[in-house]
Length: 147
Image: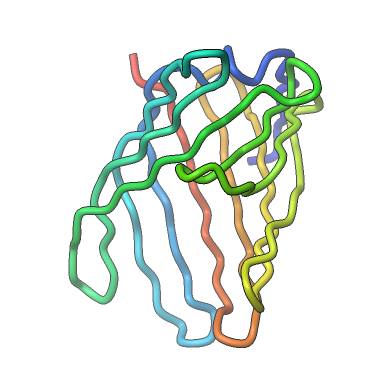
């Protein structure tokens, strides 16, 4: 995804339903998995978005249901958000005003480095590189807006 599309209002941009395809690669073991499903960004009372993701995660030939919930709260400006886990703990910042953003999330001994890229009004991507004593992962997620 080489093109970038500046986002003036991240809440307005993300609002709605997106098809999701995530490739997961364990760089140490050389194994791959995938997640396929839907993410819905719905309005939160008081502002921001509730991110609800549901689908199927397939790893080593076994498919399982998977889901996660995040909160995208208003950031310092319209093109920004404060992303939190469902329980309110901080996850990462997000600033798509230039169309691309890089952020970090330390998790115990591991470091998650995420790159977010808005390609156009209907496509965006996240790439998380996870490194630490027990993890060496690459997670690439493509989002396509649903009609």
